[in-house]
Amino acid sequence: MKRTSKYLQVVINTIAESTEFRFNHILSFLVVSLPLIFTVLLWKKIFGETERIGMFDLRNMVTYYFLVVLLQDVTYPGPFWEIIDHIRDGGLNMFLSKPISYPAYIFSLKLGINIPYLLLSAAILALLGVMAGFDKYLIFPSDPINIACCFLSFFLAACSGFMFSFIFSALTFWLEEGRGVEVFLEFLISLSSGAILPISLYPKALKAFCSILPFRYVLNFPVEVYLGIVKGRELIMGLAIQILWVLLAFLILRFVWKSGLKEYEAVGA
Amino acid sequence: MQVKRETVFRSSFLLEIVSYIFWFVFNIFFFGVIFSHTRSIGGWGPYEVLTLVSINQLIVALYDSFLGPNLRRFQTYIERGDFDTFVIKPIDLQFFISTRFVDLKPLFSIPPGILTLIFALSMRGSPPGVLEILIFFLCFLIGLVIRYGLGFLVMSLSFYFVRVSALHSLQRELLSFAGYPLSIYEKFAKVFFTFILPVALIANLPAQALLKYRISSGIVLYSCFFAAVILIFSRKFFNYAIRRYESASS
Image (cartoon, rainbow over the protein chains, first blue to last red):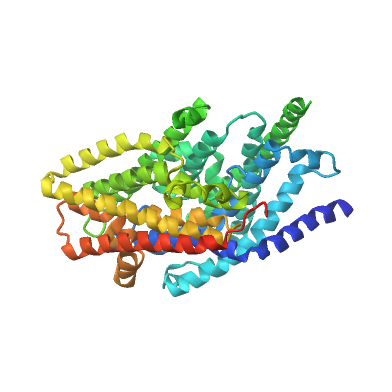
C-alpha cells in the first residue's frame, strides 16, 4: 500500500505542477492543433477530387488525424528528456540511493503529465472541431465491442509507447552524443507509426516494413481499430501482436536498464 | 569553428544529415501517395506540387541552418542570464542573437532540393524565363524574411513566458505547412493564411513565379509590405519585451 501511494503521490504532484503552467499546455496544444487545421484543409480539397482513397473517405480521414493529434504525445515511443538529463547530469544518483524504482517513478511522472494533457487536448480539440466546423466529419463508434477493443488497444499502445520511450532514453548510458539517433528515431517513428499518413495507404513493401516495427501498434493500429477499419481476425491478430510487443518491450527494458546501470556505475566509479 | 563543432561526433552528424534528407523524401512520398489516387489538388498537378515542396525545402533548409538554431536558444539565453553579456557587446543585439550559430546539417538537403526542383520543372515543360526567375528570387527572399520575422516575434514572447517550452515548436509548426498548395485554402482560411498570417505565401509565391502562374502585382507588393512590417514590428516588440529581462544572477 505504502509502495503504491509513493508513486501515486508522484502522479498527483506532477498533475499539480503541470496545471501551474497552464499557458504552456495551451500553447503546446496550439502546436498540435494548428497543423491539424492545415491537414484537414488539405484532405478536404483532395476528397473534393476523389471520393475514396484506399479504405478512407473524408470523414474517416479527418477522424484519423484528430485521434493522431490527441494520442501521439501520450503513446509517443521516442526518447524522454527527463531520463536523458538524469543520466547525463548525474541526477540519477538521487534515485539510486533511495528506495524507489526509477522506471516506476518515470511511469508515474509520465502519467501525471499525460492525464491533464489528454483532458485539455480533448477539450481544445472539441472546441476547435466545433469552431472550424470540422465536427461534422468526426466519427464516433457505437458498437460496444468496438469501444472495448479501442480502449484495450489504446492502453496497450500507451504501455508499449512508454517502455520503448524508456529504452531509447536509456541508450544515453552508452551514447556520447545521441542527437543523431534521436533525430533518426523521430523520422522512423513518424514514418512507421502512421502519424503523417495512414499506413494502409503505403506501397506494399513499405507497409510490410512498418508492420515489422513496433511503432505501427502505438498509433496507426489503435486509431484504425477506432475507425472500424481493422475488424475480425485482423483485429484479434493485431491485439495479440500489441500484447507481444508490450511483453517484449518489458523484457528489453529490464535488460537495458540493468546493463545501463552497470555502465553508469562503472563511469561513476 | 562551426564545422569542427558540428563534426566532433561524426556518426551522429551523418545520421542527422540522412534524417534531414529522408524527411524531404518523405514529403515527396506523402504527395506521391495522394497523387496515386487523384490527378490534382485544387488544380495543382504532381509536378506543380513537387516544385512547391522543393522550394519549401530550400526555405526550410536555409531557415534551419542560419536562423532556427539561434531562435531556438532564445529561452536558454534568458534562463541563464546570457543577455547580461550580450547587451554590452558593440554589435546590434538582434543581429547578434539571430546569427551566432550555424547548423550545417540542413544545408545538405539543398542539393537534392535543387535537383528535384529542376526535375519537376523540366517534367512539367514550359520552363521559366528570366523575368519569372527574378520574381522567384524576390518572392523567395520575402518568404524567408516573413518566416524569420514571425519566428523572431514568437520567440520574443520568451521574455514574458520564460518557461514556455512550446514557443519554439509553435513557430516551427506554424510555418512547416507552407509547402501545401494555396488552393487548399478557401473563404476565411484563404484570407487568414494569405493576409493576416501569410503562411500560404512563403513558398507558394516563389513556386507560382517559377510555374508561370499569373501572380497579381498586388499580392507581391502586399507580401513585400508584410515582410517589412513584420520585420520592423518584431524588432520593436523585441526591444520593448527585453525591458522585462531580469538577469539570472540577480
